[in-house]
Image (cartoon, rainbow, N blue to C red; front, side, top):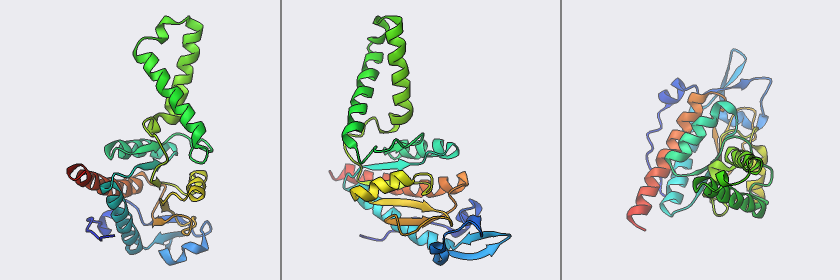
Length: 236
């Protein structure tokens, strides 16, 4: 895999608060190599390590995107939901930003059935089919459609398992991470000082609570994906 320059700036990361970890009492000892100091009761992440692993992740997604691979971005905490959707839409990736439904990947056949139902209902709504039904039936189907839009709207065009999954919060998305591990799907994961760095294929030490930190990391990954996709389009 060729190494490239992704303009990852330590000062920019400090301004975004990427270096702020959790309290010193709430940490995973496996994170010790990624921590540079303690300050006012919290751990400070070593941004040099963050820059290194973020650069590796950018190289990985660039190469994958240049070969037409598919990505899934997962981040379901309320404050990060909009950033996840924005990043995914910008890079033409699939995303889950409301709730991870258990078995979404490991029980793909069930997910696929739900997606077919979702697409059928969307078609019925667009063509006016729902309006021709009795009010009670139409209301029930509209509720189903709203529910499916909330939980599956970000993956409505997904036709198979993703090639790479980007996870914003290891603790919050632990079920999603375990499903990827079970299926052997490569993962890129933001890890705060309370996480296990050994679980994902590439772990990026970073503040997973601050929106500014999450956006900065996602912006770098999205830029690399877009660059890779443009090469794939030029050289199909």
